[in-house]
Length: 270
Image (spheres, one colour):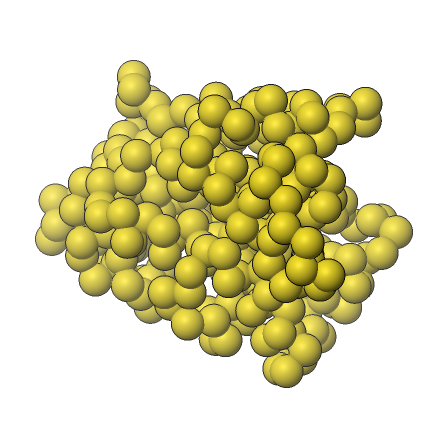
């Protein structure tokens, strides 16, 4: 038993056997179904998200930004905004937003936005590395790389929602990487990577994605997807300001990748 009153056994029991186990937001599930349907289009995605004002506004904001609107022709229709972004990019934004507003974390909105902005950045960076080092998707799909990055810290949400409501108000809410992992083990007997792996397994996610989340702090993981996530997380922690606004993430992550090319040697390990 740790000094906090938590231990590994009790933490895992709370994560795995709670009757009110956190569930994925309905909108997240619907968006993923559209993303996996080869016959879906921008109108299908628009139908799912148009009832969510925040996501609609964010997609329009992205679509009218200089990166996607170099001719400075504004649009105000959601389906046209999705078409301009491309359904893949729009799905990424909508997926992240569905988690931001669909999972009730026990902390202030500023911390929630910071948490999911970081997750979105890691997802984009992981997808970039996967495309660069595995263009034919022999080791992992590019969509899996994005999803592993987006969900890499889901164990922190699980700890905050089901184990300790003060999680995000403690020092754990502001630590990163090795310091965070050690503080969690000291306090809960379990780190967030393992907690996230358990939660994704309960949600029936694919085994490789569960393992990638569980090993996203391991540069020596035998799983390419985990190493991609590890590199993306480290790069984001090192180069993106902690409170970067969500709508600046996409441009900023590409800017930083160009300005500070990371050491990618961990991706070439057999």
